Amino acid sequence: MKKIIYAIILANLLGAAYGVYYYSPQLASTPNWLWLFVADSPISVALAAAFFTLALAGKKNELLTQLAAIANIKYSAWTVFVLLYYADYFFSPANAVLYAIMFATHAAMVVQGAFIASFARATKITTAIALAWFLTNDVFDYFLFKTHTSIPEIPEKYAVTTVVAVALTLIATLASVKFKRKIVPKIYEAVEKQFS
Image (cartoon, rainbow, N blue to C red):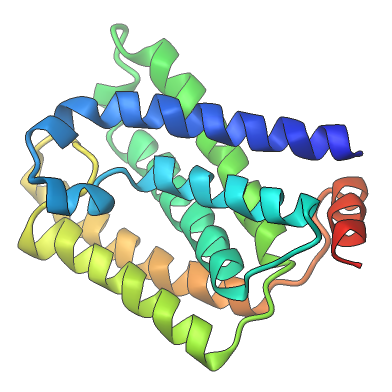
């Protein structure tokens, strides 16, 4: 089963690398100090890779685990929503193949986030830090610097997109605290075994 964990780590690292490439035009037009608030999905899967790498070493960092869980649930669910909400753009003939793949990979990230959440042992401190980080990201993304992923400029849809993003911060944070169901039991048991 360790081979499966290695494969998951590799998949996440490849996803992070492609994500940085995907965001490169937006990063190029964004001040360096804001980059951390732009490349949300690549950072999410990099955090997941870090979680699984620590698992292989029999170690776990509670803050990292909670951040990885929230990030993977929040940003992937947001992406799935946005792809559907702006479907006329993202699934136009010129874009359909790329964004169909992105839809599938981000849907898988939701599952990955729930999987990681089942290992989270959140404390008041880790939850406060995580919630503060993701709410700060929301403020930067939608109110201060518009660092959110590039989306079509449709003013009447922007408010809904913002509300969904903030709601997902709260939902994903709650999931990181409360969700304990074993997702994909065999892989769960393999990771759990690493911690024992």
